[in-house]
Length: 114
Length: 111
Image 1 (cartoon, one colour):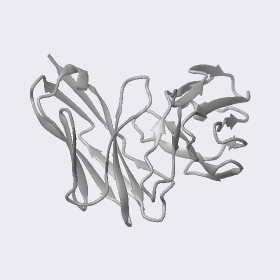
Image 2 (tube, chains in turn orange, brown):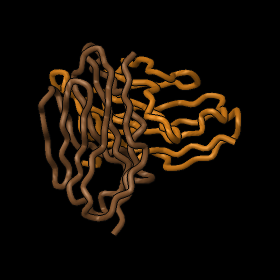
Image 3 (cartoon, one colour):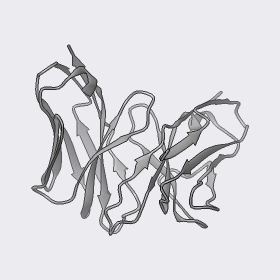
């Protein structure tokens, strides 16, 4: 199992550009999540999904969009990139376990918006 | 509001010098408390989950404990390879999809 994979590893965007961060998992997990991590701050939840076709906002969803057409993939879309979106983005997945779900994280995508 | 506070922010230890990291939490009802390890440039790596006060879990030189207000990660005789940032997160009752993270403790172990 590759676990949770993310591409790209690093990207530089200009202000106003758009991009999609890719996330895939091969553990057949139902739940998937997107977090951002800024220096000195805890991980903040952007969006999450409990299954294909179902997504919901987390704590910091503004400026982002997601879709979940398959169990395996959960891409994160940035529209009109802004410097405030400079961050490290982590995707995670988990599976329902009677309320005892453990989230497993990908290696992250480092994004710089200039 | 659900909240997680970790202390200290940074900790420097000599190899073999045991210590503890603290995670204090405020949550309406605790479903689970998670400890992760994060190496520079990598994603968080799962270590432990604790579900009820009094529970303890161990892995090599690490031992996690839980009370009704806080969790401790005890590091016994640390080695340089234990150097990392340790993250604590809580999952609240009725909020099973979401983790609330602390800001982490950056541990450096010197030979």
